[in-house]
Image (cartoon, rainbow, N blue to C red; front, side):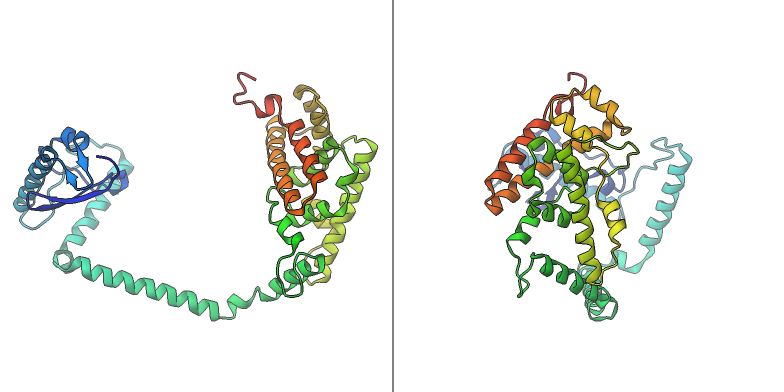
Length: 347
């Protein structure tokens, strides 16, 4: 019948035709109601409502349901017993069903359950509960607990201002907008500092993406990578930049230890692997350069591809054509062969 749910009236009864998730089905009734489901689901529906044939099928089904409700004499329609009628034998399921039947019986014995104004009263109770929750939220916002993080917030704002991400009015600067484009690294602050430091400008695409892997790779490796001179010097410069960034945060009053910070955000175990991969070395050969599992290498390179795209977006914000072309080329170098195959069985 097109998009569900659909609402209307047929045979003097209101109806709602909708998909019912399994968890919303409370039971299967004993009464058998004949409904021309094929006509209802496949028949013609217009913006004004169902066709005559569909309306007739709906009306017949609704009358049968109303009759079953009348025979229940104001109570719930009798349901099939899952254990005796449907053959449920699993002990855990049987226990859950028994508990459910007990709760249903308790609910049926409550006076509000038979009250004709139950829906309106439930709406009022629900609205009152929502207001109480909102009141508790506002009370927490005014409490000392919500202000506990305020000193750290001001300290972080001070760091951002000192590093040039915020101006004197705490408005976001160009550097801050660049940082907003980077989301796939271990530390976006350090990644942005790397972009503005000039370290990348001295590297080719293969060396640049290898250096970036230190900010993307998240695992440990006991193998010391063997790097060419320019890349090794860039790694030293990146470590110094990380330590300096951490020192700014420490002086601002944040609980940051420079040595621990460098170890947490920089993992250089795949730098040689990524460098060789960007140079065209086969996958089976780069796997022998590290103790990192093949699956971890694939995941790291895929994340690197995403980081390269983010740095291209950052370069657009900066208006830095050289940086854009550098990581456009870097992404093209690593996006190949088995790492980006649609299926490993056909790679």
